[in-house]
Image (cartoon, rainbow, N blue to C red):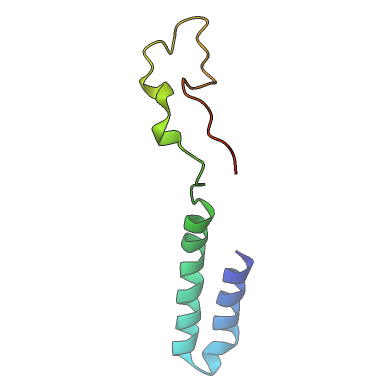
Length: 79
């Protein structure tokens, strides 16, 4: 976020005196950085299989004594 703010300040505080087009370009780059950072930061791990968890289809989910924290399949080995 600091880089984005720095680009905005640099663009309209300094660069606009030399080239308005370059200042607009710096602002466009600063505008793209936060969404790209959030997409890359929220990437799913290869071991994350929440969409394939058999507990979601388990009819005994609410029965007393049923182990909700362990799926009914052996754990995959960690690498």
